[in-house]
Image (cartoon, rainbow, N blue to C red; front, side, top):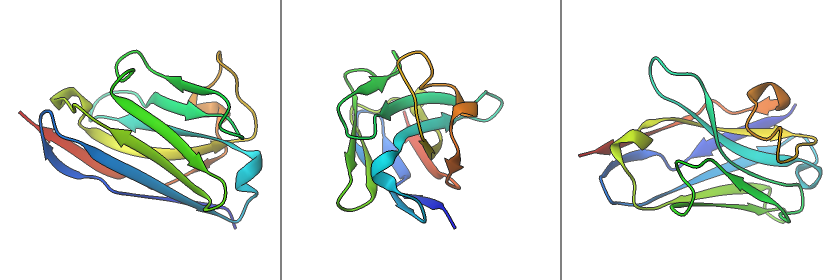
Length: 126
């Protein structure tokens, strides 16, 4: 049974940092692109960042580019999101997701992702 499980969320002050982790099991992690999405109350789920199956391509939303870094460790079946210079607008539930295939045009569309975690809450105080 395929599973992805996020961890690392919490409460942090504006300007601080957090690192999210996502551990995958039950599917061939190496073959899948992985992504982070987030959803704030009353808003649609949005793509934050994505990495291709082999780590060769990474994608970021404009709102996090230069502040967040995604990394995929195929040896550990783990995805990371290093978040720096956090802003109150980054407050949301963050989700990890897996897709068999994505490209620069499709990475941010939630419907393209097959497996989803339950989410981890990130709250940034001003």
